[in-house]
Length: 144
Image (cartoon, rainbow, N blue to C red; front, side, top):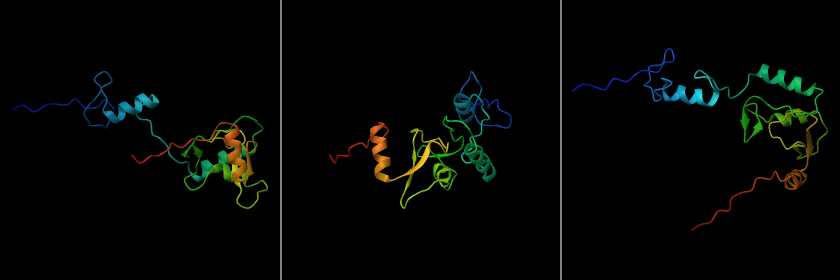
């Protein structure tokens, strides 16, 4: 009995079988192509320490009033270095109180513009989210 011969992915160095005949790509490369327009796209989850320091330094010294969005890794939608939230780093230079939270005035979780981040109490932060309709609603759980 003759075994089935699979065509191999058209990406150099990839021996996986094709799943998309038109593009001649395996599933992995086809998904990268569809998401990013490049079958060789590499997603960078977290930045290096040098990239983090450089980007934060540029954001702190920026003259813009627009949001400065974090281009690297996120955690729950917030700018994340891999060990801490960037908006807390940016807010560190400002006066804070005990148990203060770093709050976004712009309601953009990815923003690290120091003009948009301030320390606030937990209750003030929650009230701000309720007033701006940015409070995430939790789905009610029921035992059926």
